[in-house]
Image (cartoon, rainbow over all chains, first blue to last red):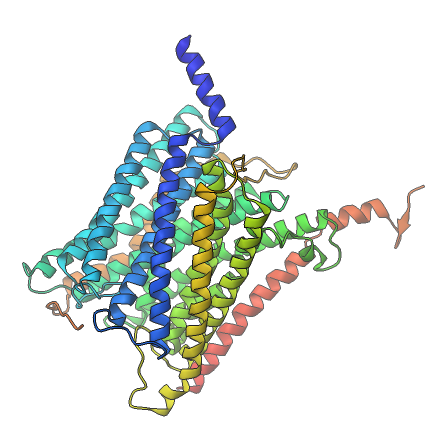
Length: 559
Length: 50
């Protein structure tokens, strides 16, 4: 009787609070690390932008490539990994009735392992022993402790994946033949991609450790690059899947609308999971040693990722139009004006979605074989991922933070803080538009990426890049203002905002929505299909790269 | 007697307006145009540099 009463009280408190205090603490810890990484990575990004524009000379103890490596790792790995895990764990906790104690423990151990890994990675970069950039391709060799740090980070992520799988399976066991809550379904997709997408890079890193220690003389560079990109592009879509979970589920609720279609949304998640991993091959489209037929196959496989994105574009426009018309919008685009543009919880993800239109179009350019030759390794690519990750994904994360952080900390988003959020969003958008826009244009003019300031002996072509590089510095300056405002907003909402209740926005389906078919829950089938697509994409090139391995390379330290 | 507009009851027109997705069709068309425009622009550069 006492046990039943206790259980009932626990359930009631979860319903009232939405998520248990222990689960809140977990997510807030992950989010704190993410936004500290944003601050540090943002400062380094500014230094890098000003140096590249020729407006600043870094001191001798801090070189451009060191800064570039730290900027990439802090923002591309630390910020995004900690945010996706923290947010998705809050989603699991909120929608599945709390995290199991063992799952919470796994997530805390994962947190610890990732922090140890970050300590290894950051220390080696600070000591200038690992200026190998975020992609850490061989034959450039970092300190072996850099790679050991990366292994710790991946182990931490895997523990979080296992925790999510356990919680999901436990809910399924207690809710037989029921469709899981949509946000938990997204979380499952995100963690499936985290786990399977990171297997290749973990194998790569494990082969690099003995090579960096000098225990093996050479490493297969092509194999390493291939294993890296099986992860590198999947990571992009892990962020994307996380971001669109908020587009589909939270944004409609914020604007007073309904979920477009639960079935379509789950289909998008499944397609993104199945098609994703071989998509990374388009990063190697100009690499030697691979047949034209294979490259054509990979162009097709990469482009297939665009289909679920186009479905998302349709679904989101439909949500906005239906809601805008309910609010009195008329004519072809009158509904657009009826949307709540003054609400940062809508504005930030909405700009993120708009930015995804040119960002996605740029991705299709990058994926196309001939077109890739125009933009390959130019600043166009840097501009592209500042639009995708730096705008579409990060602005969505910012938008999420304005309701998730006060929800977890038991505080409220005040009108004043909402105004600050709107200003922050505008500054961020302006900074990214100037910087990413200039990068795209100057990239088409041939300016290379991953290069510190140079005029190539006053060559006229290089001199023509300079005005755009100034714009890059101006954009970077606006962005650091955005970083400071955002970090302030997050920690204010965590510790200083007025106490009160904040909603975890989850949109309800339309009244006349059809029930979601149960077969969509068949994760075993989706994982088998995903692995089949991986085999189609990777079996031939991997066997070829191992059986007909090119001469291996010794480690090089070029900085 | 129902109020009429263009031969249709205004209530029906209101329902039509709420269910209409013509703006979505237009917006998706804009997305398609951006994709095609960007692709064609870079392809033109590729051809020009051959």
